[in-house]
Image (tube, rainbow, N blue to C red):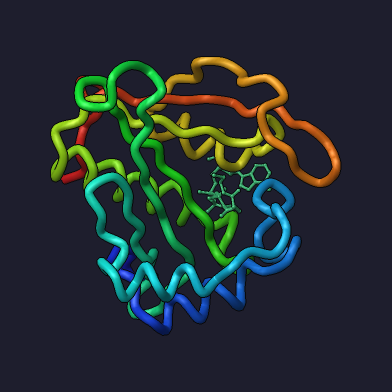
Length: 176
Ligand SMILES: CC(C)(COP(=O)(O)OP(=O)(O)OC[C@H]1O[C@@H](n2cnc3c(N)ncnc32)[C@H](O)[C@@H]1OP(=O)(O)O)[C@@H](O)C(=O)NCCC(=O)NCCS
């Protein structure tokens, strides 16, 4: 059984992201916001390999095969940026790899990575109120549901509620 891992994004991964996420079916109903400028991905890869001080992204790999990506970025809306910043995480798996436990495992690896390499004490995640798969992933990882951010996201011709979850450092037990 190939092992799941996270590694730095490559040029080939950017091609795969472009091929897989530029449609309703590929991005999924909860993540399709219309076409976007994928040249930005190449510019970013050339700039800092997607490892920034306020955000980053990694490829999700099953053995040698890239099956999606995870992202993290700074949230500074809870107080002053230099004292109250936390991470928000996000994930997208290519459609054929969904529903096999990889989304839960990839986010477990990302949470372990972020708590190990940065001193921040809170990781949050927001997801469409109807995105049960992502909500189950977060719950299985020990995230607490904090509530609904009402009518916060424009998608598919309407405003949608987002569920917000968080995991604090003291609640986190890293995998062996
Ligand atoms: C959301 C996503 C990361 C979940 O990863 P996944 O590998 O598909 O999910 P898992 O196989 O780890 O399943 C996690 C849980 O969700 C459940 N689940 C999976 N697919 C489901 C679906 N379509 N509907 C309802 N529940 C679902 C599983 O049964 C499991 O719960 P259980 O352990 O209680 O049975 C993945 O489906 C994906 O990339 N979707 C498109 C992009 C997206 O929605 N990203 C998240 C928003 S930021």
